[in-house]
Length: 388
Image 1 (cartoon, rainbow, N blue to C red):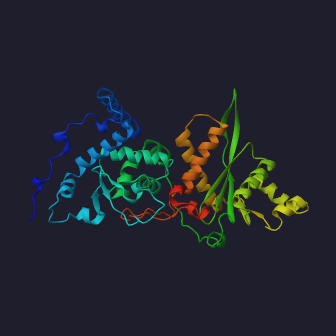
Image 2 (image 1 turned 90 degrees about the horizontal axis):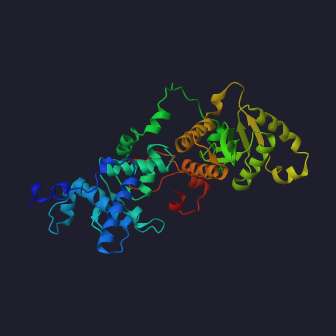
Image 3 (image 1 turned 120 degrees about the vertical axis):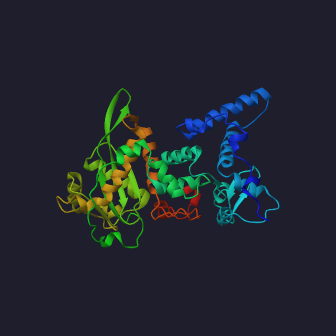
């Protein structure tokens, strides 16, 4: 027979009042730290050796599921269940040994992913703890947007029903994103893509280059300016960032050599009409006379091409990447000043996050953990879990 709703347990907070109010915290790390301190106090009083952080995480997930899914827990605990709930059927839910509800995926045979990724924990889409987890994932991917946040959420082993809608609702209240994204934009009719952006070729074969504005870094007792030189692949939208001391010809050629040593020599470089790139284009023809240049770049026939004057929209590809990088940098650093090596570390994190952004639409109903990113083309033989 079909059991009534009264069979299932009552709400969790009616039987167990919460010691820590979840809705009074602004970050998941702060909530986890406070709950860990509570467990640490209990462990000291009981003279126990506990992993307080692990117990705190388990408590948060357990409490959230008891509040959000009491009927599903009662159904999964019932050994004589005679019907299947629609959500349990669609997500293939089960209880793990710790009593947490997980969603069984279809990649159990994979050796590249952990148990948590293959069987993510089910979390409520409107719970305060879920909001803090989404904000934490949003901050980890440098405030890149819904797709990147959803990928980071699934990489950590969480499954949110209607995940894209839940992430959109949380990101709508992100103060930093509102500050930098709330600007008027007038859409224009997009022209056809040029041939060098639609060919199937190796990464960075056709690359766009551009300088950013100056950044201040702390150099002991004084501050100095540095610049970022961006290389972006015009086919797979990958980015490579070099920190240079100035926008001189020598700094540009040194950055080009470092870029070529890591990613290969491109066939053509596309840039705007900055003075550095115009002079560099003239020097390329003269450099053919030098033997050292012929040995390194002669067989590659490297060309530097500039866009038409007074036509900045031709360089929209690298200008959009510049905006993404600067937005991430402003949201992470703000008005602070970093030392040189800390800036290199932050730039490396931003480059990884930008190259991990999804290139295709990620449906909230898709249970696959594989997302097409730029890093999959740059490092195709690396473990997919390490690329994230």
